[in-house]
Length: 344
Image 1 (cartoon, rainbow, N blue to C red):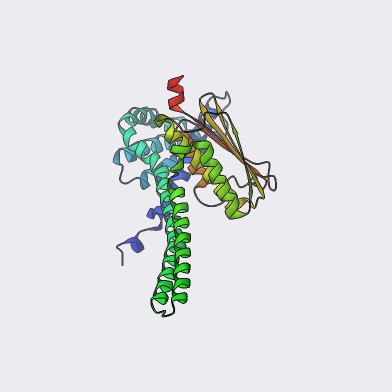
Image 2 (tube, rainbow, N blue to C red):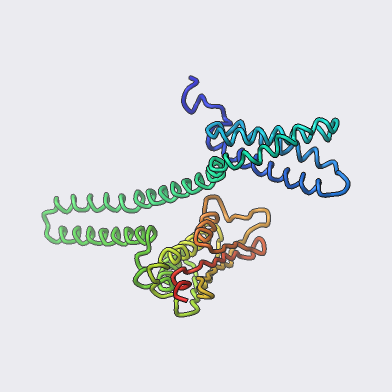
């Protein structure tokens, strides 16, 4: 009864632990900033003991959760005790804060030893999100294969079985032609899936033509008007050193168009590509429902964060802006081309 996932406390389940850990990290950082800002003022404000208690409680909770990282656990315990002493000194008498004068400098020194484990802790959230994104796309691909490819194969198999039972040559030919048509349809579906997984045309045709092809496909499949504006002649076939950066730019456009289709309820989309200062500069603007100011993401999933991480991974920038509900959304990104920079 007590073993396995059913017997684990709710706080230690991964889908609960991640958000709680992120909340504690944010609370500890906010409390530390508030305490430091208050400490710099001439007159102590009531916020200082509250901020110290917030840091102590948040780091104490983190120390309980990071059981697999002993050095980080010791570091967090020292910080929690130090800020608890500071809070006690403000609430009761100054002598209660003296242990903090030992614990907090000792924690700063010990942080050097605990940094490798702390870096692991900080990277777990992003790693989890990346894994979740991969699983998300794996599920989409599996759905496409099941709903399109396997069903077409099953229909073709039934058609061929029926053709084998035909004695009339004309009926046999009709069944064969139908089976061939379904096989052509299946080949088109597979080509679409392969293009989604890896745009092979990017190497031969270049970023501009590949984006144009993507835009035409999205427009045809979803009844959208997708305008593509390319500025500059350097977005053709990229050198080998620039392939990954160009692929990242293509993925940002692909994800942005996918978000428009799924969430924007738009009629027209404008995709702009340009080469400026050794960067691929792109934007995707739609005339859809836009974003409410209380909702910074266009919907559930990992799309926006995935685009941001792709840009940051190559030293680029990313932004998502909207003037509000009903005003459309604009995705902007700038990704440096390392090959062009070395050539310059």
